[in-house]
Length: 374
Image (cartoon, helix red, strand yellow):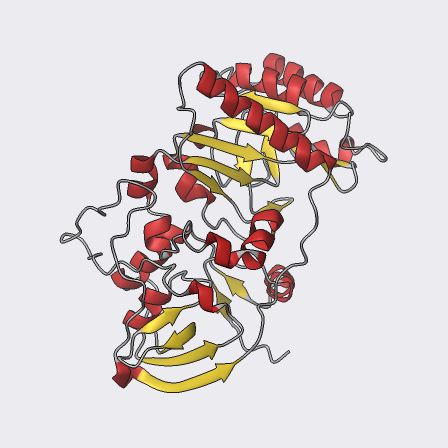
């Protein structure tokens, strides 16, 4: 390791970076994915000297075949003073034609609506462009991405999925969703990622890859009526969600895209096992130690214990439902006790809290040996 990275943004899933960030030897700026491209365009993040961009290939006319990740590569190619292209032949040739790179974005006050009205609309072109005078090197490689090892879904994950499917079926039954639902957004997960790599040729005609400033754009998300499904680290009894920090101080991966989707989704779903650390820690807590998604942006919380539809509930109603139906049975008495004490002792009764007790919950009520199934 050469310690060559001083600052990282906007998201990461690398264990080495995570260790350095949490040790305080690397700085990290966590931000919503939809903000990155425009922040660069606004000049908020400073000058970009050199960009290193992976591509699948280079066409004779200089256009670039994007790789399996589009991300913000369009922005890096546009904004950088100099560019190094890494042509990775390991990437599948079936990727060509899967992309939709839109060059119609502009900065305020010249910004125009993004003309996507259906998920399968194509509004751009399949290739990236770069000024050839910027390109200072082309590097050829044949290396796979360093991916996290995927694990098969286990019983807890299956139960969470079953609760979500039952909920969506009910929404169809009562007429709030059509039988073919609405576009689904899912956060990073092992099953979807593994299937994509294995069956990329099969999915080629069904998948469109777009730059993050388009795929995560709040305007597009709200227009399409996306059903958003994302994971969490902990949720509190009122529905606020921590999706980035362990015990409020150690970053996991970053906020990524869930914030873009949660606030603008037709239905915003967050899901988690009810316990972590082999059942020793509750993922439902009195007060989240870090809040990425406030209770205003969280409509549904799901654990293997069940699903809490929070859409028409006031804070105290939310708390009763989450504690009694979604927390693990081993932690329900302690959570119930906290809430009842807060009802009596909190100076405000809209969202009752006892600040001197809220964050001591983990230490005071750890339950060794609890299991996720019940």
